[in-house]
Image 1: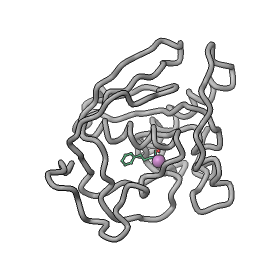
Image 2: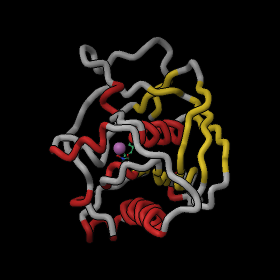
Image 3: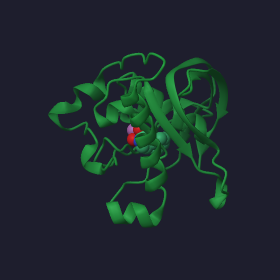
Image 4: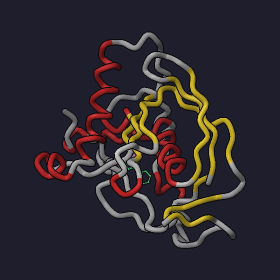
Length: 189
Ligand SMILES: OCN(O)CCCc1ccccc1
Ligand code: NI
């Protein structure tokens, strides 16, 4: 079971793994990679269950990338829950070797900013991202998928794909004016 103590922190010496480009994953998945994928998705499910999260002191997460648990491989679990407890998640997948193929000119940012399971402090400011993205990935069986996302799920996937390329959310915050946004950026509440 992945716990908070397993998270690589950006302020500790092991942060190299957070700042490098992860390795492509080859198929068929090794036993180890299959177990890692399952454990990452299980972390997200548990962290979104108040009782389990409380019991194991898990910080809620809608995504988790392999480098965050010290594995420099191109794999991330994403679990964006449905609106108002709607059982069906908006996006639930372990994305392997993801690659953004195109994106909107339009930018978007989450109104309350972003956090990260690898960043144990608040970093205020607007994280400017693409409002829409089209990306490809392989699922755990190696099947190729092409997905178009918009708004919050698109933001989450960009956050995870960034992790696989050594980028952290605060890299996208304007250092001088953290709450400055390019004109007509969509603000996501
Ligand atoms: O890498 C995932 N992780 O650190 C958990 C938080 C994910 C996340 C939080 C806010 C907006 C987009 C994505
Ligand atoms: Ni993160």
